[in-house]
Image (tube, rainbow, N blue to C red; front, side):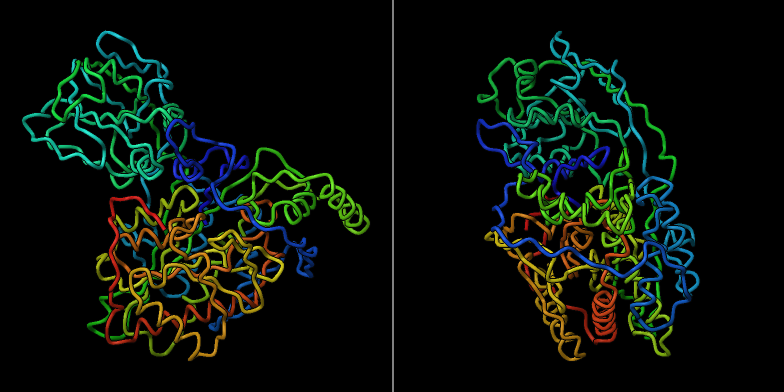
Length: 588
């Protein structure tokens, strides 16, 4: 699951990550210290130390057609192995992981549904580096790169003696007619809200036809983002990820226009500017790939509709240095029960006394093991292998579901839903032929000792032997939510559904943080299945030996039955709730 906290374990965070960490208020600077503005969890007794009899390594065994805990264990020990180096998108580890997924899809007899008859849909992933000689001259004044101006683009942008014209407030403006903007840069001011910033820096912004480009003016409270957008790193070079734009701070307005910003009216022409926004762009050394496969339906007519079942294959890679595994395990269990969600918790003297005592006891029976790999066994190895097991079950049935089943293992979810955003923007099947999407992300924990999240009011949520969180199941189609409930009961899965994280305006915003959202924004009914958070979330300790395989088995069997019910019912789930704006910003 994509994080909303600032992590020191990764080289860079996505803009979505930083934006989710900030709430803007008039006259206040954005805070990059506090992870997010959420109610503080209530004090609870420290969970007992987790015990596992599972090994660090496991020899693989052949899988069977049925969904079993043993098969899930075999698959996950392979998929979350150290050899895949944390599966970070655009790295060798992610490349190897997608090779494994495609090879298994082929073995199961699924049809390739990626690019050019393959199982792979390759994202245009590139690496960028801003040339420090880039320049922006407005009215004879040279702006300071990284402080007064920055830019977002997939290639170098040059503007010579180009006049600017004020277009109004982003999101509120009426697009100026072509004759007013022809050959000009349109300047839009960005409101001082988190959603507006996310739209400006990560979403789509309408540009009037005929304009040379846009200049977005950030509010004073968000001045720090002007430099952040210049960060060296990977990006997806695709219009669905937002078009090119110049970014300037609020103080630059006086250099673009002679009148005060408060007095400007749409259509006001300002000074002419000269801009050289120079980028060094090269393809990622390893491609980022969705793995896409289809199990054809058995009904001649309904086979052209699809039930999508998905998970994300990537995780967060490796840390810069190795640390003691047991120390991290114990520290997080006692101080940070939410793992990376609790990065702002530092611990107190009493807690460190307990940590040191437990470590001393552990050292009596186990030596120090240094670790630097974020294996992502639960996030989202558990979902990835659950999808494999569902695919194996359905592909070996004598009579297949009437509708086709679309299996997608998305890449780059941890970067900001890259793979699902790209897939739904460039779907390899007709997007409106997808009747529902079942997203599986982190289904390997959820015990009574796990803090699985918080309620909207800030109370800790905990799992149990029958625990499963559902998110989004009735947000577009109440019929889909009812169907999931009825299948759970009729097929005697007897899982207890927790809807606490699905509350409107929930501060953790889970509905917007995994791949289902990219389907929902296009009107596809979704259900997000998860057993929730825990102390190993985005930590080095998210390893296969700590996973509850019988629990994954139960969850995967439920989802397989839901997929079959969706595949065989006469009609598709009716969308009877308000649809989202696919160009807008997600808000739970």
